[in-house]
Amino acid sequence: MEEIKFLTEGKIVAGRWKIIKKLGEGGMGAVFKVEDKRRKNFMAAMKVESDISDGGVLKLEVHVLKELAPLKNVVRLIDSGQRDKYCFMVMTMLGVDLMHLKRLAGKPFSQSTILRIAMATLYAIKQIHEAGFTHRDIKPGNCVSGLVGGDMRCFYLIDYGMVRAFIQTDKHGTNSLRKPREGDQLFRGTPRYCSLNTHYRKEQGRVDDLWSWLFMLVELHVGLPWRRLTDEREILKVKESTKTEDLFRKCPNEFRNLYDYLNTLKFASRPDYFGMWSECFAGLKRAKGSFLDKFEWEPEAPPPDVQTALSISEKDLTEFKPTKRTVMGKKLYPYASAANFKENILKM
Ligand SMILES: Nc1ncnc2c1ncn2[C@@H]1O[C@H](COP(=O)(O)OP(=O)(O)O)[C@@H](O)[C@H]1O
Ligand SMILES: [Mg+2]
Image (cartoon, rainbow, N blue to C red; front, side, top):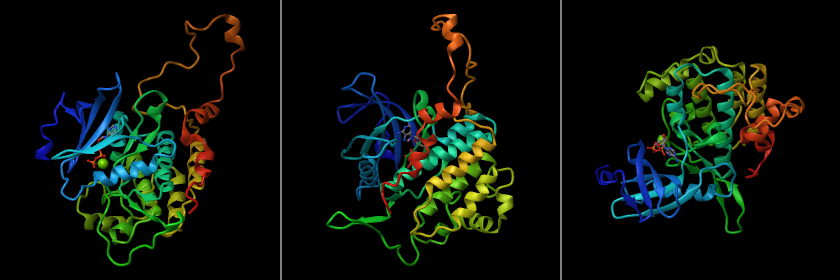
């Protein structure tokens, strides 16, 4: 950490990226908001890592972002490089992560909110899986909203320091599934959110990311029974002994169905993303929610049918038929589109 202390406000990295402020700090480095000296008003996020002894994990993150590049609705890599004492990577500037949004909201998330977060983050997880990687650290701090406008209601996955490729490509360019490694694996993830499989030191597959996703949803909505514990073994004990009905008490019924579904998946299974999305969507309808409902952290919106100064005449007003909220939502948000969840890009 010492080495990157000198990266303070106003400093310029690689002759191009001017540091505006620090956004976050982790064990190995920090994330800053930066401005492009070459493009007026262009802001981006720069992650810096001070441990470059064996290339560090930032190299891996850069690799993953490059592989993600052909996909829609993912964080973009803008620049990367290495200096004497640190590595850096510049990516799309995002908004606020779910851990902070939860704090900002200051009240529990409604069913409409949690089910929409479920769909948005499931889509983000699907995208990294479509690129052939398991993320292995799905948690609120790694799910970040977009920065402006409608994008503020989308969520992106960040922090690729623990990813692992679950596919391999042969010399003819054909993909196949990598065999899960036998024996004990190193622990990768966060004890509060990881799957039982991960506690047992088994190789993680796509299903393990989805276990973390489900635990994250329960935590954000009603809180996990083991949320106050920090020791991994104690967390495991409670995770193993908690009754399913206790875990999902006060949660939408659909979460319980997702739990039963995840229990049927094996390492090699391709999760049925569309089926899981449909379950959440059914929940949203059951809860009479809409893709356009306000999130708890958003300021009060003006009523939808006020007359504005841009309304041209009374006639325009009377003939105006508002678009149905579901239809509007489908146009606006990628996680509201069934087609995005049906798409099978990796075919594996
Ligand atoms: N592209 C980004 N835009 C906005 N904030 C970001 C971005 N990337 C990271 N952050 C913020 O910085 C925090 C730490 O980043 P992360 O990549 O998760 O690093 P770490 O490995 O330290 O957890 C995140 O939780 C988030 O709040
Ligand atoms: Mg993180």
